[in-house]
Image (cartoon, rainbow, N blue to C red):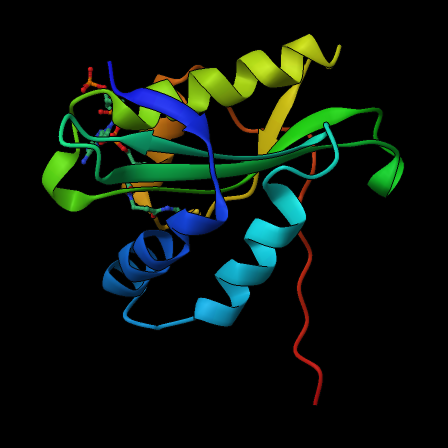
Length: 145
Ligand SMILES: CC(C)(COP(=O)(O)OP(=O)(O)OC[C@H]1O[C@@H](n2cnc3c(N)ncnc32)[C@H](O)[C@@H]1OP(=O)(O)O)[C@@H](O)C(=O)NCCC(=O)NCCS
C-alpha cells in the first residue's frame, strides 16, 4: 500500500505536472489555488497525495464535505482523482479513495458522491470497484450563447 498523506505546498509542481500529462493542459495557477483552499485548510476539505516507493508523487485526490447544496444533506464529494499512468492498477487509487472516505466518515457523513463523464469507462470502472453506483441526481446542462 502506498503512503497517503495530506498534500503540502511543495507538492504543487508534481501535481501540476501529473495533471498536465494526463489532460494535455497546464494549469499551475488552478492547482496552486486548489492547494491553498484544500490542503491544510478547514477540516471539511481534503487534498491527499500518495507517494511511490521512491517518495515521488504517485497520485492525488481532492474532496470536501458539503451540506444542503441542491437540497441534499451532508455528503463527502470527490472532486478529482489522478494516478501516474506508470503506477496504475497497483491499488494507489483505491488507497487514496479509502483514506478520503475514512476522513469523511470521521466527520460523521454517511454518503460519498462524485460526478463522472458517463462515457469514461475507466473512471466508471474504478468508482464501481469502490462500491459506488448511480446516484439519485441528474446533472442538467445548457450552453450560454
Ligand atoms: C481511475 C484511476 C484513479 C485508478 O487508479 P489506480 O491506482 O489504477 O486504481 P486501483 O489500482 O486502485 O484500481 C482499483 C480498481 O479499479 C478498477 N480499475 C482501475 N483501472 C481500471 C482499468 N483501466 N480498467 C478497468 N477497471 C479498472 C479495477 O476494478 C481495479 O481493481 P482490480 O485491480 O482489482 O481489478 C486512474 O486510472 C486514473 O488516474 N485515471 C485517469 C484520471 C481521471 O480520469 N480522473 C477523472 C477525473 S477527476
